[in-house]
Length: 192
Image (cartoon, rainbow, N blue to C red; front, top):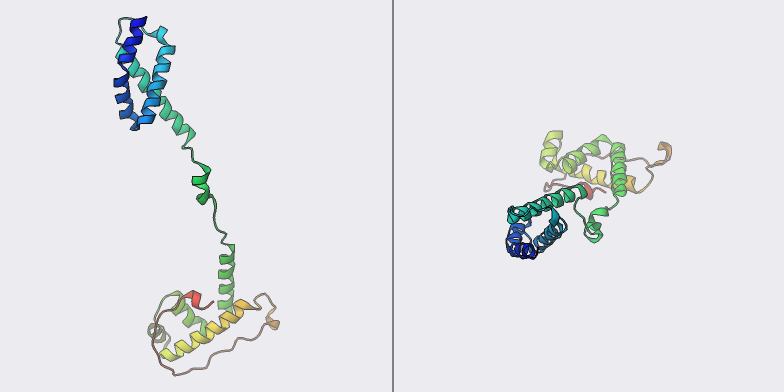
């Protein structure tokens, strides 16, 4: 029986090389070899003298590796809570949804003459010149209507959206002006 222990010990370097090839990590490979040797020694009574000891040990090591892989797939990958913590937290976005709802309501309350240029320029990204050409009005008029619309949106977003219609202050309709100026793009944030 003493010879079998020496023969098993002689196979350890080969088992380590094979285990490192399987798991690609020196520490995990050593753990795999240790599990293989513990299992082989516990089941030494099953080994038949005269058979290939190296093949028997490699079979045990390979089966141990396959069992570990299957076990890890079923169990999943353990993650430390500290690593997962940023993913568990999510900033509340209810306030943003409410702001968008209020903006939609305020836009609906604007006169068509103010709402259309705001939608074309701010939401669709058109230039003042393109919006003016589409609406058939000069650039200055587009700018004036957007400016008045912004003021009205700011007022509507800040007060009285939930008041009855009779209690709300009236939203003035713009007068056409012939002011000229540069054209550019505006964002929704500029209106709120």
